[in-house]
Image (cartoon, rainbow, N blue to C red):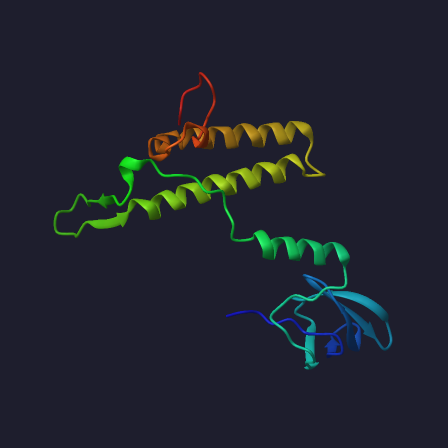
Length: 181
């Protein structure tokens, strides 16, 4: 179920701050003007926060922050897009059969393309994780290096799947000269 976002003008009640009106919307917070406590930022998930009258309710996030607006626009444009990675020709229209050790159970068939897509998505998410680690503002350089080495070992564990990729440039590459987990 899609979560709805309250709009500007919604009347609310907070257990600590009393009655108020939403005057701004951010991704994870509402900017609320309270009668006795002025303007406060309240998390959308705050259990002490209650909606009295919802106004301008939307499924979209509306935000007054220029940075959040820009980020949301980028996410909407590029959110579902991943790099196109070609499957090796010999695997096209193929099937992966998972055969249980118990012969009384039915084998499971899975299109190779579906399995391959999951592998590519895993690789893409590992790359995003690497970028997040590298740009993290609180982690020390030593902590970043330790996490990077762990991700490299994960890539090494996934090198078995390189046989499915058409082009070597898309392969998983682990530690050079190290043992694969």
